[in-house]
Length: 292
Image (cartoon, rainbow, N blue to C red):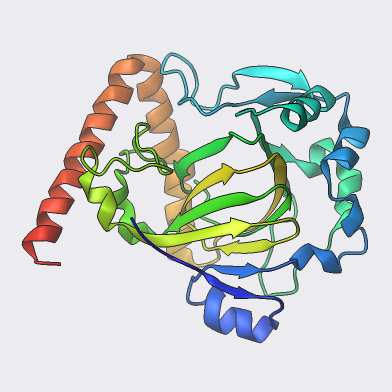
């Protein structure tokens, strides 16, 4: 893979952000962004454990979803306090996906301020994501195609970003928002997946309080290097063509895939994986044929 660093700032004006990053759909890392919040000292695992410790939460791991089950089915459930104790005491790949603050911990809404950067955030869905020191999230892009600010807390985290132009080199699986399950983005096998070495993207390392602007439909691979959690603040698409594409993704593509998965199970999943490999191989031949 061809990876470069994103621009990094300690602060930025609304005008600068809109002109140079939001309108250009270019990622940006804002260091120590959350430190300006009045309740910054409450953004830690101990606070979450105290306030939501008895809540039962669905957990996921690094394994691809079982073809015989729904693609969003959790692997197990655990009380929040037991989960936090687990990831803080030993290496773990368990993670919590899409913990909606407004439903599960509304008092946390008072502990942060939406960034004044000209983004129209969807205030129904501020969400938290948690992970142990061995957890990662498969390469994917979000089905709602929204831009978002991703703010990280506690341990360090590594993120890879790619725009949609790189989809063929990433082995995108048809009728889905993820890539082939077997691709290891930490130790890429370029013999097995040769197109991957031509994918151009960004590599980011986040620390406590950092905020990352991720443009809509950007591919992202998240790897927790230490136990931690992140807050995502989303902005829904406001351009007509992007909004229409979002409706297709959410209501047509996703449900078509769910139906095929339910009917054909592993056969459908395996067929899509082979289809993805074929399409990326064709893209690689075309790329090399142009002498790029």
